[in-house]
Every structure is written in structure tokens, then in C-alpha cells.
Image 1 (cartoon, protein in one colour):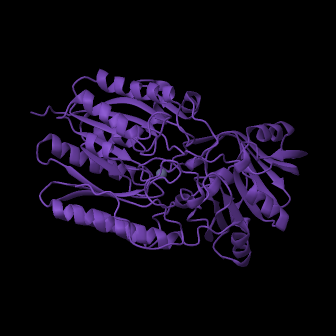
Image 2 (tube, helix red, strand yellow):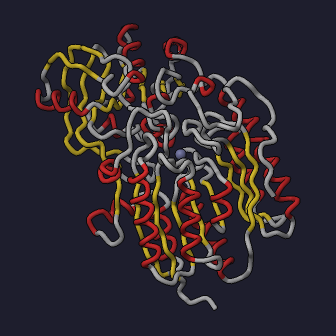
Image 3 (cartoon, helix red, strand yellow):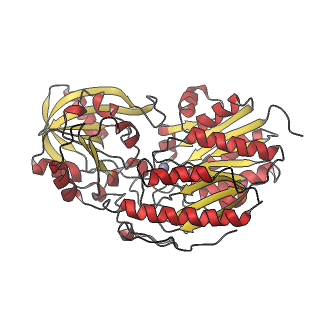
Length: 503
Ligand SMILES: [Zn+2]
């Protein structure tokens, strides 16, 4: 018998690990970004704004469940976690689950591409240990970022795994509701979910806002609810994490009534995804000069040309202080441009201390390591200073702290420097500092794809620039040591590799 209301444990430990990132991942980094310990009122609001975790708590309460909220820990993508850091956070999450006592459902908000020095598949490890704690009879659901690299241990340990479908990741609430539906039906004994997944090659990141990917995502939803198919996810994978499981994967959760159709769906979904991503990534490997040549030819009437410097996106583990694109803009004498944000707390502090209106020589960016390029020494004018700047995140709330943010003019380019390493999600990064994007010809953002959700209304055109950096799109040049699945470079097209079969 199931108690009413259901007792639901919700917890989260999330990191997108970039094996090639120059930045280490410390406990301090979690404390600085998001480390909510169960019941701590000081960090509760921040945790509730964290996508999927807050959604799982709100959705559960809306369904009348009793929610036991555990750890919520996240930090900006960076290198593999040191073993003791990972184990401390993992064990804290599991201790919260254990302390919750008898629960009816477990919901874990994980990433899917988290690696430590000792564990290539942290999520599989967490789910296996959670399963060992609650036993075989309690439904465990996991929500993953579609940039996770799916593993057999995750699938074998959880009852239902669901990846978000959208990139930008705007659909976590919908996925959490979907997960509750399936877990509640499982708890009532109406279904016994099974999973089938198929693996494909390693591909670069592709957004879901434009066709043919837009229609592809809709086709995933259309497959759900018939032929015994309960849920369909397409994991894009995270190519910069180096493990034997790195790659794309389709995932079909089904009720066992038509396993043959579930297998066929998994194979078809993967094949179509690989084909579409190859076609859509063509052109994503164009370098700075090619992209600036095109940008200078474009004159959209609806807004500036927005150039994505995805190779330096901190949201994938890059340093966020590279100077390659800024240097090219300066050398070309391009004015009417804005560029942000360069993570340079030192330069931001010097400019802030000099004050608005000051002119001074400043060394900008290029500090973290070789992938950041050389710093730029320039005479700058300080245009604006904010000590507690924020931007809207993917949830649409003004929740993402930017720390100290300063706008400086370098030649004709207005550059945002800030103290908290974060990608550009929305125009507030610029507009809060008085930079009017509608008056710019070019806007350069350090983001791969997430910026598109909020920049759609202001961008006249979007170009993707493959500058040097930690997230350079030339995946075939990465120094992988553990990869098993093939890398599909941006220019090659074709069907998915057969990959690893799993029933
Ligand atoms: Zn992601």
C-alpha cells in the first residue's frame, strides 16, 4: 500500500566535467556557486532557483506530496573533481537520503557528465549507491542535462532516467512533471518501466531552437504515449569529458509491452539525431576571420549581429578570459561593438577603483592559461560599475550573480569585465551597465547556445565563431585517452554508428 501523501526525497549533485579545462574543481568552488545543505535557510532561495531541483520540490508539493529536500550542490563546469571533494558531496547527499527514512519516491537531479579523479561515471555511482540504500522496490528517478554521457550503470540503477529535451535547457519543469507521472504510476503498480538505449558518435553541441532540430525534438514527444513508449530522451553527450561512455545516446523508457518497438524507436531516434547534428554543425568550425568577414557584410535591420564565442564558454568549462576575438576586433578597427563577459576580477577591480569616467592603461584577460591567449594591454575608459550585478538565467528570473561588473571602452568596443565566472545568458550583462545593444553592429557573447533564449528578441543575426579555446569545436584534435565511441567531426555526415547494443 502506498501512503498518501507520498514521501518524496529530492536531492541534487551536479557538475559538467571538462577533462581539458584549465580550472580545478574545489569544494570552495561549490561553496561559492551553490552548496545548499538540507534545511539551511541561508541558501534555500538559491537552491530553489536551481533548474530541476526547485522544479522537483515545487512540482511535488503541487501534487500533494511530502517533500524531503536534501543537498543541492552545483558549480560552474571545470576539471574533474578531486576524489575527496566528490566523495564528500556524494556521501552528504546519500546521508540526507538515509536520514529521510522510509520514502516512496526518490528524485535525483544530476548532470550526466560528472567525473572525479576516481570515478568516470559519478552519476552511475550515485544512483547505484542510492539504489543500495532504498532497496529494489522504491522508484528512483533521475533528471539529466542532455549534455550528459549516458551509462549502463545509470540505467541499471535508476527506475526512470529522463534527459532534458531542449538546448537552451528551458524544459526542466516539464521533464520533472513527466518524471513524477512515471514514478507515481510505478509506485501504484500500474507500470514497471524498462529502458533501452543506443549509443552513437561524439558530436559537438547543437541547439534545439531551429529546424531541423526543432522538429526533431517535437518528434520525440510525439512518440511518447503509444506503442508502450513512456518517455524518449536524446542525450547529446558532452564531448569535452573524456570517458569510455562519452558520446550521444538515445534513451527510450517503455512498459515492456512492445520491447521490439522501443528498440526500433531508440535506433531510429539516434540515427536521425546524428544525421541532423552533422548537417547543422557544418559551418560551426569557421574561425574568427571568416566569421568577422561575414559579420561585416551583414546589415540586419532588426538588431546587431551576435557572435557566439563558444570556445571560451565557462558553461562548458572554459576559462572565460580569452582574448582572441577581442584582439581581432581591435586589429580590424571594428567599432560599434560590445563584448562580454571577460572573467577578470583583477582588471574589474582596478577599473572600478579608478571610477566611472577614468581613463587608464589596463591589462585585460589572458590570465588563466595558454588557451586564454595573451592579455590585451590597452588604454581604456571606465563607462560603468556595478558591485552586485545580476543577469536572468534560464529560468527567466534575475537570479544569476555576476559579482563586480565593469564596462570599459577599448577603442570603439565596449567590453564587460566581471568577477564571477559565468556565461552570457541574457542582455542584462550589457544593458545593466548602460550598453545599448540596439545601437551596436556586433555583440560578442561568451556562450555556446544558452544565450539564444534571451537574445532572440534583440539579435538581428547569430553567427557561431570557432575561436581557439577549451571548447574548440575541432573535437578530433582533443587529447582523449579514454574515448571508445568515434568522434564525428562537424563536416562528416552519415548514419549513427551501430554502437553498443542493449535491450
Ligand atoms: Zn547542458
